[in-house]
Image (cartoon, rainbow, N blue to C red; front, side):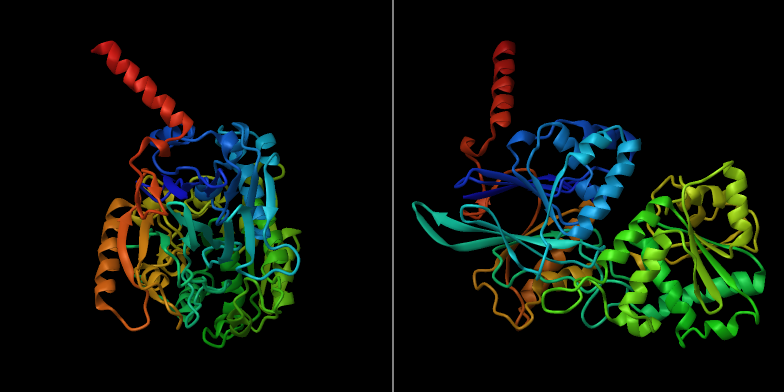
Length: 535
């Protein structure tokens, strides 16, 4: 029997963690183990409260991708006794190491030694193909398939020999979407990655995120996005004589912007070279020590080739849009990792490492020599972007381009809400968000690509989203299911994920005490003892 209990992302979009227990082989494992993010008091309590399981009894963590809300508590898991393997792609491992090392310095949840003690097992070593089977235990198998949310991201399917009574039946499966990206085969409009793979047609269960379960994207056109970026840079630099600051997240958003800027220069759609003043050399500076290190991962992993000769991640449309070979793409990211300057006709792109000397002088010197600065963090609250913002925000000749979510109370949200800064603010975040919208989420569940789905219908669990978004998305799932479109998956029911054990063999929530862990049994005993004492 296989049971699942959702630990995180039940009430919001962070802290993703699903606990699975295969009773036949007594194998306990997690899909993701992320930190909670948001308001400081709630987050501090959520990230430090005891795990509902014994970390020493967890044998594996299956990791969908490297964002901290999916991997950020793995070092704490290690510190409290987890000695098993973390299964993921090479790209996810390499990025996670960098992000966790940064988090160890500021979170206080664990140390660098805990990060270094993680046992990684990469699933894409050697001649790799998506869907390769990974044996976790007797009659228990996991497969990893491609995602488009960030580099290295995956969906994960777990298969097990389903049993009813004493007789085993065929293998059943549960699919975990991780964070779904935006790309589709018809329209891979973000610059770097191939589209997500869909759940297997015969999946009994699908666990889907619902971050944007209640909304549709405003724009799904790469030409619109790059034209807006091009026009904003040209307007600020060539017409107003100012500087452009683009606060950006170090992981994936920085690399997307680098690719877009390179595309802007050569694309006939934008006519960038003609519009730039004659003799003008446009200087682009990437200022983020963390993103520099991650650029090295992109240089190595983005253009990897599968056993069938196709790219593992790289969206081949990028090469055509930017007249750019795969080797040139890799070389740019590798060069920025090493601090080298790369020239493309009228522009140069360079990077800067850790600050040296007095901070004010260092930032001032970089600003003086640069027309466009890409700097972390994306919300302007810390890192180089906060320093550049202080120097640029009061001058109306300057422009600040926002390309990501801005949390309430952040400096970036203040800019969006129209404070008294003099600089122009341009919001391109809807063009860059890495989460699939409601339409993409629905298509990922229902489209079968010509294959035949289960006649009994699939049970869908909705997790990783705000309560209102989950409820809206649940209604949309059932609405589409009633349409009975030819060739689409049937859905038996859609459930909002909660923290009760669900028996995946029986297809219902487990109510018996046999489904309780040792820790839960002890807690129940202590609760009953207290009741007796007060009776």
